[in-house]
Amino acid sequence: MEQQHLLANLALYSGILSLLCLLSLHFASPEYKMSWRMISEYALGKHKWLLTLFFSFWAMSSVSLALLLWDIVPDKWAVFGVLLVFISGIGAFMGGLFDVKHQLHGFSFLLGIPTLPIGALLISYHIIDLPGWSAHQNSMLLAAHLPWLSMVLMAVSMKLLFSGFKKAGLPMGPNAEPPKVLPAGIIGINGYANRLLVLCYIGWLIFIAKTYLSL
Image (spheres, rainbow, N blue to C red):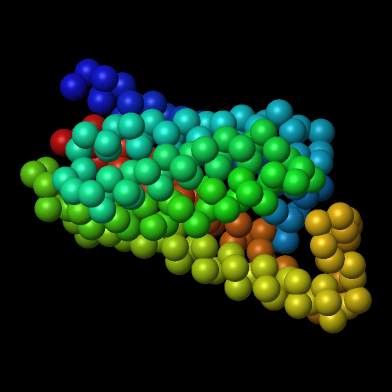
């Protein structure tokens, strides 16, 4: 029980520290416009170490929560959800280890981003009937649905951005440098969507950890 309490606190506070690191980056590197520059692009600035901390704390929160839930979830589908959350944490760690120009950054994205929404849904729908957890049913399900909704929003916003780049004749691809200023007529809200996704993902981790501590 003491070990589970420690894991819950680790998931909670490392999640909070991750968000604080992200908030600090917005003040430390204001040249990266929030509206259309992705969080990973902060690695190209002067405060890459702060971005690495952001990803590391995020990974710590995911892995700690997965270890906490391993002995709590009631069946194999929920266990599969826990594994997905663990894999998401590995992806977050790799995101800090391999920056946006590294060939493994895309693989880190594939491990970290699509896995958590599925894991959150599988876990949440299977633990809401457990004693104590059922009292938080509505807020738990809301928190579980926000990650996949934010992922869809980010995908749509990225499609709008790339479509605008293509119409403007701007180069695209892994080695293409992003423009310093967003050309007129291009819809650039992907940066906001990217940050909202992170808030929903880490917010779910924090919420589950905090709910466990309140039981």
